[in-house]
Length: 95
Image 1: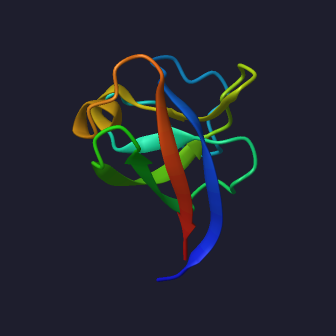
Image 2: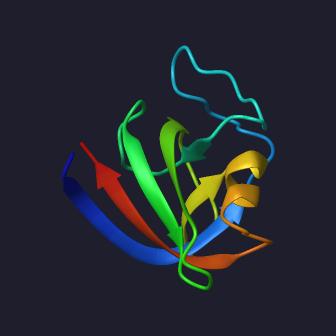
């Protein structure tokens, strides 16, 4: 596994996927994320910069659709890394 992309920015919790990737259904209990450019099905590691907790997720949707944010997480994924509202994160695309 190696790093393809590194981004630093804000993550948010998203509870209503609007444009899921083909064959994907939104489930708040899944470890999943939405990203604007990383292809659907790819794996990413998101680290909360405030507390150092991280989670490995699959991209299953497009987003976030709000300027200034780099990734949307399902509630389950956000809870795993202690994300409440908006938090600064580091995002790594894995391969």
